[in-house]
Image 1 (cartoon, helix red, strand yellow):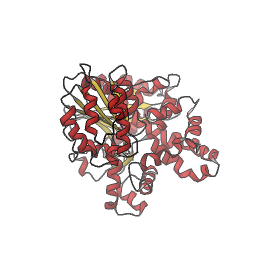
Image 2 (cartoon, one colour):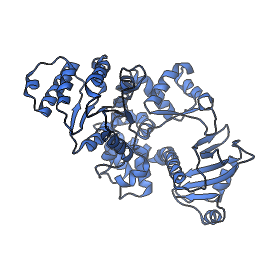
Image 3 (cartoon, helix red, strand yellow):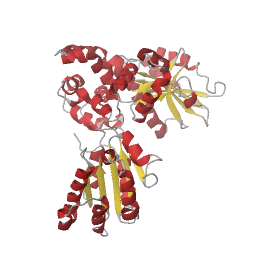
Image 4 (tube, one colour):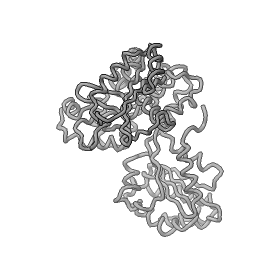
Length: 462
């Protein structure tokens, strides 16, 4: 497995900040396992940098550990022997060692300092204003508890608000890079691996050595000793207080209940009582609220659906959570049979739609059409659903797309069904130009290929 894939934009941004003529303060955050530390350690290679990992110990313990690290880094024996009760003395000693070579100060899991002492963001604000901001330094505050990092460093109420020179919310790696992680896998296998690992580097690393997806699931998810077996609990318990309530909510959505009223009905709660839970999960990048792409005021739309963004969590709550009793009682082989019988049709085929949307955006950038759409996503009404609709408002162009993760090629009938459904879309009905794109993992019948060659408004992609 290659050591470092993707993150070109993030690395370039960090290099630009490193080359700045004035001090830089960067906030880097994102969910656990997404590769923040790997990005940081890769960036600081061969640079004059000090890396400090905050622990969940007291502020006093962390301050002493940082003091000892700075004493070693600067070769200051007096600091090593001193009893220091204030952070500013340590930072002053560190910055006094700065020469013409720019110094990187990387503080990982920064949020734990604010957790142990709620006043710490104010303390660090003073340190930045009085010691760091006029020195040749680049400070990176890194953290994996999204809600804490946002409240401590990015929100308007934070003492550090307005001090940062940039921020990176690190996301999962896109599917388009999976062939670099798994160069020996075919397209179907890549999609199946992505459907579980979801672009999270740590998960990819675990799955990398297995021969097929089911073997990887059996070893890394179904075994009770594997950390992925209890991963959702680990992720949620550090971000929220009522883990059980969030479990119930995510499980309900994973089961196919996406409308707010339906979710509330299953959970026997009032819709207003769900608001805070849904907002928290959206802020954590676990859920998203989706509306038909043609909606002009998404926030006011009453047609919103809630869906799980994270592929692994979606997989876990679909297939692991309902079968925990089987697994706990030593019958994981029965759970695996259930996974194998439903994995493709009930999970991979839906993830494939997201992959197709990612591909569509790439085609847009590559000039597949003589226009560029500005919006793309799903569309539905009471009777019809269309996997992809893309809108070019400037030229009144619209693209309709269908995604089929089938075992056999698709034919002209799928195009005709798509055309029929597209007639239900009201957007610029009398003045639009229509295009169609069909995605198929198993290719296309010859009659459909011949038709597409004769009609330039039809694109086939496999």
